[in-house]
Length: 135
Image (cartoon, rainbow, N blue to C red; front, side, top):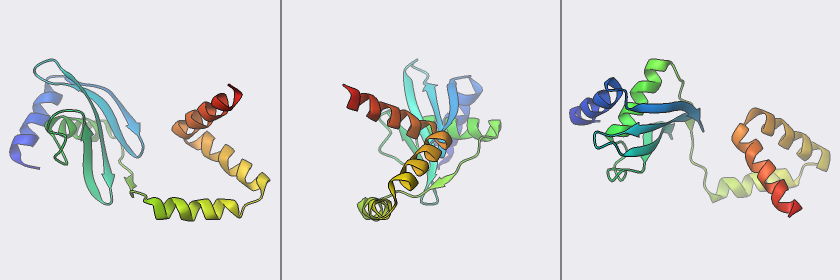
């Protein structure tokens, strides 16, 4: 991260342009208002041991933009922890599908229920899937 990105991120934060800061998928999400009053949705997290940002601004091709730096600084100031995540590939999905196929029905139901309680995003996806089946 260069000094310009650090300065831009600090300006966004100091001028109160970071909103709706919260934890998400092991990282942090927020909305950042730039100096032109455009809103950008930002996620920042640690992926494969490296700080990574996702932003819908035109600098999103870079690993971090000023908006992502602002969200990172806000998270650090608020004491929000980052959990390192590892990107999963198709081999991981195949491996987990194979493991799940070896479980009994009751084991699988119990595992899904415990995960839904622990992970609100997973719970939402489970609910959406069951509602789709009812239609």
